[in-house]
Image (cartoon, rainbow, N blue to C red; front, side, top):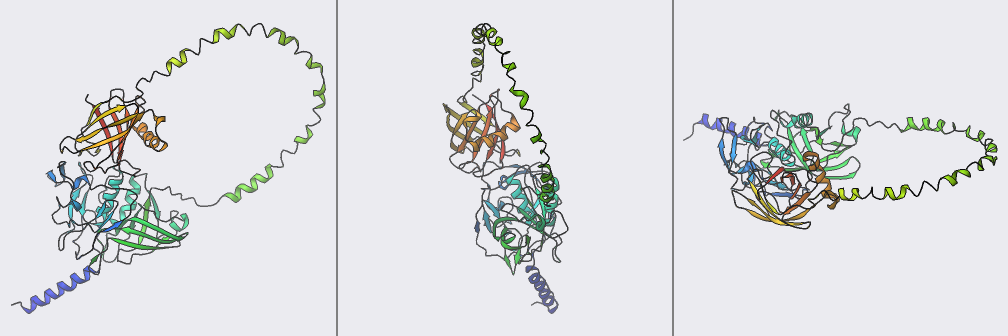
Length: 478
């Protein structure tokens, strides 16, 4: 039998839990409270321009340091959905998926404060599955140079990331006096941009989300769709939400996430929006009449009518024919050494052979060693790419040759290789894997330059992605 005092206490706890379930829990960076998890949400597929793989840190962790950070992952196993290997409290069924990026939640009644590090050494430990975990995971998968920032709650994401990384630019949503105010800039978020929401009475940490859709009915008016973690409304998870935009300003969330205070983008943002054309126009008009003195010069043609100078050039042509024949034979041998210099870039194509990358293109240092075997036939390249531990393999096909032999699009990616590794021998390699391979989707592209020591260096990219996934250093074996 339950005592009356216990009944009263239970009813109070139930009432508090019910009230809390109407609100969103704190979106903190490695601190916060568990969220009420009641969800029968089926996965939502949101179209993406990119394809993000399951993170490598969602492979099983083999070893941790004394602070609990994972130092070694099992590269023989594929990553588990929503990190279910390392976080048994995670629901392995994602709430939503956008271009491979999974929106996750804990199992019913479990904690959403399980720490995870994205790489080792760890720059930050994130809590699965707070809102900041999703956004920082997305940014790091999109660009490995955007290391996750610690001590960065939902409302601080835009401020801290734009202060740390020059490729990200801030736009203010809630302060008309700011030079970066969206109303002054006349800018709205686009797909891939990130929002920060201010703290609310029930959540001092604010919130953050990712824009996955945008639809404008007229300039400054329309809607954006976001994906997010750790938002619950009326007992139900809300992994996506559509926000209204009026007069260039994003309106507050309908699910209790709060008001968007700012957002960040990779697009250029200019704080000087003042139009200066009226200042230039009056300055140009007076300068046009200034050349009026030119009509005073027509009197000068009269002295040019004198025919006397025409007689003086006649003796000059008689002297010129004699020297001209002598230099012509001597100058013909001089161009001959020039053509012999042009063929000197002997390696016109890449030689067939075998190369190995000890990190498999994972620039964060946790990847599986990968071996490529290339067969070169003119400018055509074929072969295989094999994981040294897992034994996974895929055929590869591609092209080799000088920079000018590649398409304009490939030249753009190869220019980035040259910026980082130089032009080497002047021989380049571009190939794709035709099957999924150790976390790399089929159709991923590899751009490399052949160095004088035989090493291939460059970067690789997931299909239809503009930001590299990792750096490549393939050392020649045979």
